[in-house]
Amino acid sequence: MNVQEAIATRRSVRAFLPTPVPGELIRRVLAQALRAPSGGNLQPWHLHAVGGERLDALKATMRERVQQAPGGEAKEYNVYPENLPSPYRDRRFAVGEAMYASLGIPRDDKPARLRWFARNFQFFDAPLALFCTVDRLMGPPQWSDLGMLLQSVMLLLRAEGLDSCAQECWALYPQTIGNFLELPEGRMLFCGMAIGYADRSHAVDALETARAPLAEVASFHGI
Image (cartoon, rainbow, N blue to C red; front, side):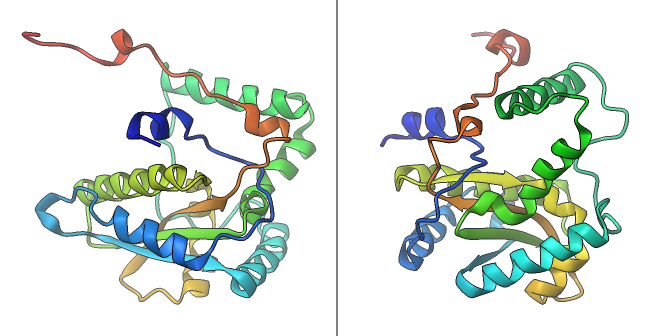
């Protein structure tokens, strides 16, 4: 698979098969992804791959935690800006409606929507999880490095025939995940990622999100 194919076929997969991901495969992917760009070569990322019995334990913990604190814990950052304006608000609304339509969950069925959202914290049944953490002293330029690393991971997973779902929703439970990962005091959680083989029979995995046309987001100067 070339890079164009990897980009074109990457999806946020929300239904996975139970097929295990070999440990040597994720080690190879992460080692290759470390070539991602990093300003000043700081390499601010810290990665935590979780599988097997440890992942089972985390999923069990999260089943209880989501029941105890459905609104999450004290947040360390906002996933989205408050009072999100158009067109960003419109894009977010559209992708949510498209996903729930694929699941047959109407807008007025709030309990069903909440139950589906809670599946994030089971990694959509993926057999492997990845967390990305960062030192608290790092700023926006270093956070952009994290994004480039995670994109590299997701494209390399596609090259291996795997799929993923990057999950900033884990920012809702930073204390629980920090304790589980035994993060040092100066470190914080950025996001999680579900990793595995997509269940192509599930309707939600047929969803392809829209992208704004090039003319809407790009300007060309002197070209």
